[in-house]
Image (cartoon, rainbow, N blue to C red; front, top):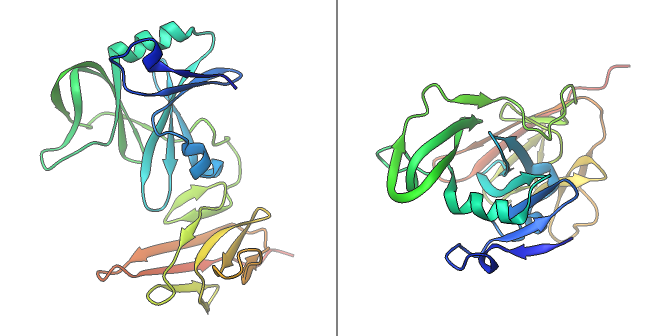
Length: 234
């Protein structure tokens, strides 16, 4: 896997690593994100001439990389990054904006979060998302694939890792109250674990039915998780 530093081509550019893959180059906007987050939390969104990777967790959504599809030369990627900037859901009390931009070229929405490509410049440009196209499905969410679970109405095709405070949070799993430190995948299934024994879940959901999870936060910061999985049909 070849790794290239964008700054080696243009010292004025930020320190961004470019990783060569089989069919694309990936500009790592968040270094080593792939070592921090599981692949099930990555969503690939296609824009006009590039794609971007987002990390989607129950707590936040982050822009982590840009993908440049082959055939493309490294010099073309450097030129693109010299001319354009990518912004993801930056906002203040006035609205959404792109920093250090000259002209906004494209705005798309994913789960109501705006992804923007703009030409580089010196200004902060505010924009309206009215009329922006909503991307309904990421490229790496296969059409027709059956989700494993729904978390607050969002389809998940893998198990998100959720951490809990046993002293404050409430976990209700199929009507049973649990004391667990986190939820994570265990052999492709949903498991609930305690930190003192991460090798074995205290509860493992082995059914085939789609799981419904509702996760809410109280004013004091504590959270309530309600998980329901119907019995498998005979």
